[in-house]
Length: 333
Image 1 (cartoon, one colour):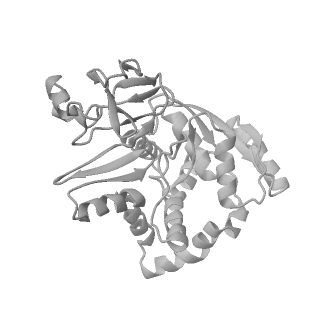
Image 2 (cartoon, rainbow, N blue to C red):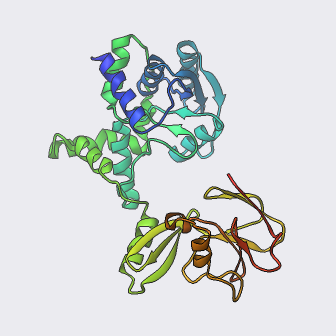
Image 3 (cartoon, rainbow, N blue to C red):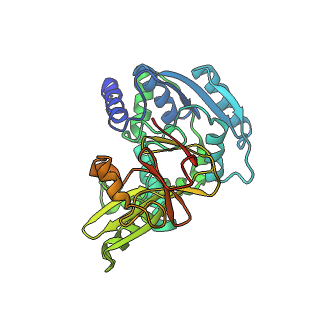
Protein backbone atom coordinates (compact mmCIF):
# COMPACT_ATOMS: atom_id res chain seq x y z
CA UNK A 1 0.00 0.00 0.00
CA UNK A 2 1.39 3.40 -1.09
CA UNK A 3 0.29 5.52 1.88
CA UNK A 4 1.83 8.71 0.53
CA UNK A 5 0.18 8.06 -2.86
CA UNK A 6 -3.25 7.78 -1.23
CA UNK A 7 -2.70 11.04 0.61
CA UNK A 8 -1.60 12.77 -2.59
CA UNK A 9 -4.69 11.56 -4.47
CA UNK A 10 -6.94 12.97 -1.77
CA UNK A 11 -4.97 16.24 -1.69
CA UNK A 12 -5.32 16.57 -5.46
CA UNK A 13 -9.08 15.95 -5.36
CA UNK A 14 -9.55 18.43 -2.51
CA UNK A 15 -7.62 21.07 -4.45
CA UNK A 16 -9.32 20.43 -7.80
CA UNK A 17 -12.80 20.64 -6.32
CA UNK A 18 -11.96 23.34 -3.77
CA UNK A 19 -13.36 21.31 -0.92
CA UNK A 20 -11.13 22.73 1.84
CA UNK A 21 -8.87 25.73 2.24
CA UNK A 22 -5.27 24.91 3.23
CA UNK A 23 -5.04 24.21 6.96
CA UNK A 24 -8.80 24.61 7.44
CA UNK A 25 -10.64 23.50 10.54
CA UNK A 26 -12.87 20.55 9.68
CA UNK A 27 -15.01 18.10 11.63
CA UNK A 28 -14.63 14.48 10.55
CA UNK A 29 -17.88 12.56 11.03
CA UNK A 30 -16.56 9.20 12.21
CA UNK A 31 -18.41 5.91 12.60
CA UNK A 32 -15.35 3.88 13.53
CA UNK A 33 -15.34 2.04 10.19
CA UNK A 34 -12.39 1.99 7.78
CA UNK A 35 -13.69 4.80 5.54
CA UNK A 36 -14.11 7.44 8.23
CA UNK A 37 -10.94 6.20 9.99
CA UNK A 38 -8.98 6.72 6.77
CA UNK A 39 -10.64 10.14 6.33
CA UNK A 40 -9.59 11.28 9.81
CA UNK A 41 -5.99 10.13 9.37
CA UNK A 42 -5.50 11.46 5.81
CA UNK A 43 -6.89 14.92 6.59
CA UNK A 44 -4.59 15.20 9.62
CA UNK A 45 -1.63 14.06 7.51
CA UNK A 46 -2.46 16.78 4.96
CA UNK A 47 -2.27 19.48 7.61
CA UNK A 48 -5.94 20.17 8.32
CA UNK A 49 -7.12 20.96 11.83
CA UNK A 50 -9.31 17.91 12.35
CA UNK A 51 -11.71 17.20 15.18
CA UNK A 52 -13.99 14.18 15.26
CA UNK A 53 -17.68 13.73 16.01
CA UNK A 54 -19.45 10.39 16.36
CA UNK A 55 -23.25 10.27 16.05
CA UNK A 56 -24.63 7.54 18.31
CA UNK A 57 -27.96 6.22 17.03
CA UNK A 58 -28.14 3.35 19.53
CA UNK A 59 -29.61 0.94 16.98
CA UNK A 60 -27.33 -2.04 17.71
CA UNK A 61 -27.20 -2.12 21.50
CA UNK A 62 -23.79 -3.09 22.85
CA UNK A 63 -22.19 -2.84 19.41
CA UNK A 64 -23.28 0.80 19.14
CA UNK A 65 -21.82 1.54 22.56
CA UNK A 66 -18.57 -0.14 21.52
CA UNK A 67 -18.45 1.97 18.34
CA UNK A 68 -18.81 5.16 20.37
CA UNK A 69 -16.12 4.08 22.85
CA UNK A 70 -13.79 3.21 19.98
CA UNK A 71 -14.25 6.65 18.39
CA UNK A 72 -13.56 8.39 21.68
CA UNK A 73 -10.39 6.39 22.38
CA UNK A 74 -8.98 6.45 18.82
CA UNK A 75 -10.02 9.92 17.59
CA UNK A 76 -10.89 11.83 20.75
CA UNK A 77 -14.35 12.14 19.23
CA UNK A 78 -17.26 14.02 20.71
CA UNK A 79 -20.25 11.67 20.92
CA UNK A 80 -23.69 13.08 20.10
CA UNK A 81 -26.80 11.03 20.88
CA UNK A 82 -28.96 11.15 17.77
CA UNK A 83 -32.00 8.87 17.71
CA UNK A 84 -34.39 8.89 14.75
CA UNK A 85 -37.82 7.32 14.26
CA UNK A 86 -38.25 5.53 11.96
CA UNK A 87 -34.51 4.92 11.49
CA UNK A 88 -34.38 4.89 7.68
CA UNK A 89 -31.08 5.44 5.85
CA UNK A 90 -32.16 8.87 4.59
CA UNK A 91 -33.45 10.02 8.00
CA UNK A 92 -30.30 8.89 9.78
CA UNK A 93 -28.08 10.63 7.23
CA UNK A 94 -29.92 13.96 7.47
CA UNK A 95 -30.07 13.70 11.27
CA UNK A 96 -26.27 13.36 11.34
CA UNK A 97 -25.90 16.48 9.25
CA UNK A 98 -28.47 18.47 11.22
CA UNK A 99 -26.88 17.54 14.56
CA UNK A 100 -23.52 18.93 13.44
CA UNK A 101 -24.75 22.00 11.54
CA UNK A 102 -22.73 25.16 11.87
CA UNK A 103 -19.30 23.74 11.09
CA UNK A 104 -17.44 22.45 8.05
CA UNK A 105 -17.82 18.67 8.09
CA UNK A 106 -16.20 15.87 6.11
CA UNK A 107 -17.63 12.40 5.57
CA UNK A 108 -15.88 9.21 4.51
CA UNK A 109 -17.94 8.48 1.39
CA UNK A 110 -15.83 6.64 -1.20
CA UNK A 111 -16.04 5.79 -4.89
CA UNK A 112 -17.65 2.51 -3.84
CA UNK A 113 -20.43 4.46 -2.10
CA UNK A 114 -20.77 6.53 -5.27
CA UNK A 115 -21.32 3.42 -7.40
CA UNK A 116 -23.94 2.06 -4.99
CA UNK A 117 -25.70 5.43 -4.85
CA UNK A 118 -25.90 5.68 -8.64
CA UNK A 119 -27.37 2.19 -8.92
CA UNK A 120 -29.89 2.85 -6.14
CA UNK A 121 -31.03 6.14 -7.68
CA UNK A 122 -31.17 4.65 -11.16
CA UNK A 123 -33.53 1.94 -9.91
CA UNK A 124 -35.62 4.17 -7.64
CA UNK A 125 -35.91 7.38 -9.69
CA UNK A 126 -34.37 6.81 -13.12
CA UNK A 127 -31.52 9.26 -12.53
CA UNK A 128 -27.77 8.75 -12.43
CA UNK A 129 -27.13 11.61 -10.04
CA UNK A 130 -24.35 10.67 -7.64
CA UNK A 131 -23.03 11.90 -4.31
CA UNK A 132 -21.95 15.51 -4.45
CA UNK A 133 -18.37 16.19 -3.42
CA UNK A 134 -19.51 19.44 -1.79
CA UNK A 135 -22.97 20.18 -0.46
CA UNK A 136 -24.45 23.63 0.13
CA UNK A 137 -24.63 22.96 3.89
CA UNK A 138 -20.84 22.69 4.39
CA UNK A 139 -20.55 18.92 3.93
CA UNK A 140 -17.54 17.74 1.90
CA UNK A 141 -16.55 14.27 0.68
CA UNK A 142 -12.76 14.16 0.14
CA UNK A 143 -12.53 10.37 -0.33
CA UNK A 144 -14.69 10.01 -3.45
CA UNK A 145 -11.46 9.34 -5.32
CA UNK A 146 -10.75 6.19 -3.27
CA UNK A 147 -12.34 2.73 -3.36
CA UNK A 148 -13.51 1.04 -0.17
CA UNK A 149 -10.83 -1.64 -0.31
CA UNK A 150 -8.22 1.14 -0.45
CA UNK A 151 -9.44 2.67 2.81
CA UNK A 152 -9.21 -0.75 4.46
CA UNK A 153 -5.68 -1.28 3.13
CA UNK A 154 -4.69 2.23 4.21
CA UNK A 155 -5.85 1.65 7.78
CA UNK A 156 -3.93 -1.62 7.91
CA UNK A 157 -0.81 -0.01 6.46
CA UNK A 158 -0.69 2.77 9.07
CA UNK A 159 -1.80 0.54 11.94
CA UNK A 160 -5.22 2.06 12.57
CA UNK A 161 -7.85 -0.25 14.13
CA UNK A 162 -11.40 0.04 12.82
CA UNK A 163 -14.85 -1.31 13.53
CA UNK A 164 -17.06 -3.38 11.21
CA UNK A 165 -20.82 -2.76 11.12
CA UNK A 166 -22.40 -6.04 10.03
CA UNK A 167 -25.88 -4.49 10.00
CA UNK A 168 -24.93 -2.67 6.79
CA UNK A 169 -25.73 -5.85 4.86
CA UNK A 170 -29.40 -5.47 5.83
CA UNK A 171 -29.81 -2.04 4.16
CA UNK A 172 -30.76 -1.33 0.55
CA UNK A 173 -27.17 -0.30 -0.08
CA UNK A 174 -26.07 -3.58 1.51
CA UNK A 175 -28.23 -5.56 -0.94
CA UNK A 176 -26.56 -3.78 -3.84
CA UNK A 177 -23.14 -4.42 -2.34
CA UNK A 178 -23.76 -8.08 -1.48
CA UNK A 179 -26.01 -9.30 -4.32
CA UNK A 180 -26.22 -6.92 -7.27
CA UNK A 181 -22.67 -5.66 -7.81
CA UNK A 182 -21.09 -9.17 -7.81
CA UNK A 183 -23.48 -10.14 -10.62
CA UNK A 184 -22.62 -7.01 -12.60
CA UNK A 185 -18.92 -7.82 -12.20
CA UNK A 186 -19.63 -11.24 -13.72
CA UNK A 187 -21.03 -9.43 -16.77
CA UNK A 188 -17.96 -7.18 -16.89
CA UNK A 189 -15.04 -7.12 -14.46
CA UNK A 190 -14.79 -3.32 -14.72
CA UNK A 191 -18.46 -2.77 -13.84
CA UNK A 192 -17.69 -0.54 -10.84
CA UNK A 193 -15.27 1.66 -12.77
CA UNK A 194 -17.67 2.00 -15.70
CA UNK A 195 -20.58 2.98 -13.47
CA UNK A 196 -18.36 5.55 -11.75
CA UNK A 197 -17.17 6.85 -15.13
CA UNK A 198 -20.77 7.39 -16.18
CA UNK A 199 -21.56 9.64 -13.22
CA UNK A 200 -18.26 11.51 -13.31
CA UNK A 201 -18.76 12.23 -17.01
CA UNK A 202 -22.29 13.50 -16.36
CA UNK A 203 -21.77 17.25 -16.45
CA UNK A 204 -25.40 18.01 -17.27
CA UNK A 205 -27.24 20.81 -15.58
CA UNK A 206 -29.95 19.97 -13.02
CA UNK A 207 -32.95 18.53 -14.83
CA UNK A 208 -35.26 21.53 -14.30
CA UNK A 209 -32.66 23.97 -15.63
CA UNK A 210 -31.84 21.72 -18.57
CA UNK A 211 -35.53 21.44 -19.50
CA UNK A 212 -36.04 25.20 -19.26
CA UNK A 213 -33.05 26.05 -21.44
CA UNK A 214 -34.01 23.42 -24.03
CA UNK A 215 -37.51 24.88 -24.11
CA UNK A 216 -36.07 28.33 -24.77
CA UNK A 217 -33.84 27.05 -27.55
CA UNK A 218 -36.70 25.22 -29.27
CA UNK A 219 -39.20 28.06 -28.92
CA UNK A 220 -40.27 29.75 -32.19
CA UNK A 221 -40.63 33.00 -30.24
CA UNK A 222 -37.46 35.07 -30.55
CA UNK A 223 -37.76 36.82 -27.18
CA UNK A 224 -38.75 34.82 -24.12
CA UNK A 225 -37.98 34.30 -20.42
CA UNK A 226 -38.31 31.18 -18.23
CA UNK A 227 -38.03 31.04 -14.44
CA UNK A 228 -35.67 28.16 -13.64
CA UNK A 229 -36.25 28.34 -9.89
CA UNK A 230 -33.76 29.08 -7.11
CA UNK A 231 -33.82 32.75 -8.07
CA UNK A 232 -32.56 32.23 -11.63
CA UNK A 233 -34.25 33.23 -14.90
CA UNK A 234 -33.13 32.16 -18.38
CA UNK A 235 -33.55 34.80 -21.08
CA UNK A 236 -33.49 34.40 -24.84
CA UNK A 237 -33.27 37.36 -27.21
CA UNK A 238 -33.13 35.81 -30.67
CA UNK A 239 -29.55 34.47 -31.08
CA UNK A 240 -28.51 35.33 -27.51
CA UNK A 241 -29.18 33.32 -24.35
CA UNK A 242 -28.20 34.27 -20.80
CA UNK A 243 -29.05 33.63 -17.14
CA UNK A 244 -30.01 36.39 -14.74
CA UNK A 245 -31.44 36.74 -11.27
CA UNK A 246 -35.20 36.45 -11.03
CA UNK A 247 -37.17 39.51 -9.84
CA UNK A 248 -37.04 39.96 -6.06
CA UNK A 249 -39.28 41.95 -3.73
CA UNK A 250 -37.44 44.87 -2.21
CA UNK A 251 -38.77 44.27 1.30
CA UNK A 252 -35.42 44.51 3.06
CA UNK A 253 -31.90 45.45 2.10
CA UNK A 254 -30.60 43.26 -0.70
CA UNK A 255 -27.43 43.07 -2.76
CA UNK A 256 -27.66 42.90 -6.51
CA UNK A 257 -24.71 42.85 -8.90
CA UNK A 258 -22.52 45.20 -6.94
CA UNK A 259 -25.33 47.32 -5.52
CA UNK A 260 -26.86 47.43 -2.05
CA UNK A 261 -30.51 48.47 -2.27
CA UNK A 262 -33.00 49.38 0.46
CA UNK A 263 -36.61 50.47 -0.10
CA UNK A 264 -38.15 53.46 1.63
CA UNK A 265 -41.62 52.84 0.17
CA UNK A 266 -43.54 49.54 -0.09
CA UNK A 267 -44.39 47.52 -3.16
CA UNK A 268 -41.08 47.73 -5.02
CA UNK A 269 -39.40 44.93 -6.97
CA UNK A 270 -35.83 44.62 -8.24
CA UNK A 271 -35.20 42.96 -11.60
CA UNK A 272 -32.85 42.97 -14.55
CA UNK A 273 -33.08 45.12 -17.66
CA UNK A 274 -35.39 44.09 -20.51
CA UNK A 275 -35.45 45.52 -24.03
CA UNK A 276 -38.09 48.23 -24.28
CA UNK A 277 -37.94 49.20 -20.59
CA UNK A 278 -38.73 52.87 -19.96
CA UNK A 279 -38.37 55.03 -16.89
CA UNK A 280 -41.93 55.65 -15.74
CA UNK A 281 -44.90 55.34 -18.07
CA UNK A 282 -43.65 57.65 -20.82
CA UNK A 283 -40.06 58.41 -19.85
CA UNK A 284 -36.76 57.78 -21.58
CA UNK A 285 -35.74 54.30 -22.63
CA UNK A 286 -33.55 52.66 -20.02
CA UNK A 287 -31.19 51.64 -22.82
CA UNK A 288 -30.71 55.33 -23.72
CA UNK A 289 -30.07 56.13 -20.06
CA UNK A 290 -27.37 53.46 -20.01
CA UNK A 291 -25.79 54.92 -23.15
CA UNK A 292 -25.86 58.49 -21.78
CA UNK A 293 -24.33 57.28 -18.49
CA UNK A 294 -21.65 55.36 -20.44
CA UNK A 295 -22.59 52.03 -18.84
CA UNK A 296 -20.76 49.29 -20.79
CA UNK A 297 -23.03 46.97 -22.74
CA UNK A 298 -21.57 44.01 -20.83
CA UNK A 299 -22.92 45.44 -17.53
CA UNK A 300 -26.41 46.48 -18.60
CA UNK A 301 -28.17 43.11 -18.29
CA UNK A 302 -26.98 42.72 -14.68
CA UNK A 303 -27.75 46.32 -13.65
CA UNK A 304 -30.58 46.38 -11.08
CA UNK A 305 -33.78 48.14 -12.04
CA UNK A 306 -36.42 48.99 -9.42
CA UNK A 307 -39.99 48.58 -10.57
CA UNK A 308 -43.38 49.49 -9.15
CA UNK A 309 -45.98 47.42 -10.90
CA UNK A 310 -45.10 47.41 -14.61
CA UNK A 311 -43.12 50.65 -14.49
CA UNK A 312 -39.40 51.13 -13.90
CA UNK A 313 -39.14 53.83 -11.25
CA UNK A 314 -35.44 53.79 -10.31
CA UNK A 315 -32.30 53.05 -12.30
CA UNK A 316 -29.79 53.09 -9.41
CA UNK A 317 -27.04 55.62 -9.82
CA UNK A 318 -28.56 57.01 -13.01
CA UNK A 319 -32.16 58.22 -12.81
CA UNK A 320 -35.47 58.15 -10.92
CA UNK A 321 -39.03 58.58 -12.15
CA UNK A 322 -40.86 61.67 -10.83
CA UNK A 323 -42.06 61.06 -7.28
CA UNK A 324 -39.56 58.25 -6.62
CA UNK A 325 -36.45 60.36 -5.95
CA UNK A 326 -36.31 59.16 -2.33
CA UNK A 327 -37.91 55.74 -2.80
CA UNK A 328 -34.69 53.73 -2.74
CA UNK A 329 -31.35 54.01 -0.99
CA UNK A 330 -28.77 52.68 -3.47
CA UNK A 331 -25.06 52.26 -2.82
CA UNK A 332 -22.30 50.60 -4.84
CA UNK A 333 -20.53 47.85 -2.91
